[in-house]
Image (tube, rainbow over all chains, first blue to last red; front, side, top):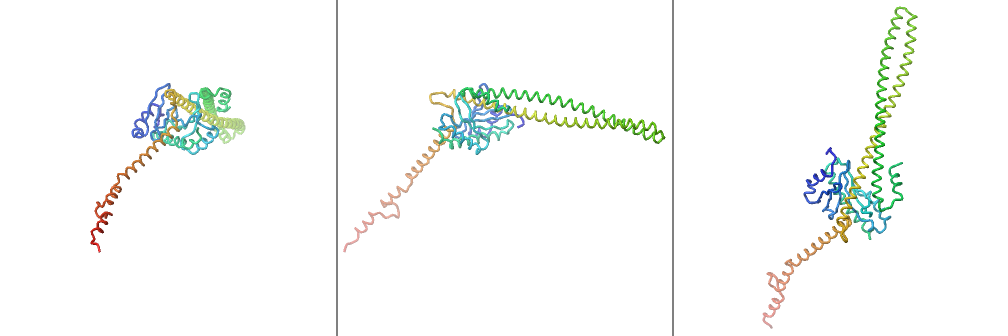
Length: 141
Length: 230
């Protein structure tokens, strides 16, 4: 793959992949103000992820939890940063969705990465997010 | 100022509600400006480099011409000495001396130009790398903003009474439920297996003395009853 992925070429490639055909994920291309691939990861409790290609980068993200579910934000942030170092390929983030803070787990890779790497990223993100949910669950209300 | 400091300065004091959108929007504005600056820097460095390299090549061809002249005049000195024309040879030698000094100056000048060429090449390389990094950062900020908007639209679509954006915590619950269900199915299956097992029936058959080879209490009693007494 010498050309950069676009969200659309990535969607088509994923749709044709064994990973998708075997039913490990269901994907859906959404056309809003920009195209986004919605992923439902059946190996990981039907976890929802959003994925897109932006210039030189492929970005895939999932929502870990809503900040308002968290009992003590400082403790939770600390735990997230510590866990961050333990998970391969994924990072923890904090962003605002509809004016509300949400914790995210996301992965970034080069838009020139081969499809196998993209799939590995998705699969690892699903695994990491559910693992992190298990680790961080006691910190929620 | 580092980009992150600029961002923090801009965001400081803004309402947290809109904070994230401002971060993203300003990040893009700031990054775009940084890219334009770096691009302008790159164009300037490239122009300067081209000009300097042209000047250097010009100076070098002048030097080569001077070297040719020097060889020519050195040759004259030898010829004049061979002819015994000491006076004219001395005049020519004076010219050669001046030429040698001139050439030495030119060489110094060219060496200085070479140093500047490599400095400029380095700054062009750095400017290019800065632009690449900034563009990558723009891609990241744009991707993050797009994903956020996508998540917002999902949240908006599912905004029923209790419907919310599905999180990894929900998936964890789902996995636990699935596991619980599987466990329940498994233990139900085991129980069923225990019931359908022949062992229970076999025990009752044995107790009733029907099962071949088994002796029932009734049979034993019957044996005693049939024995002639006394």
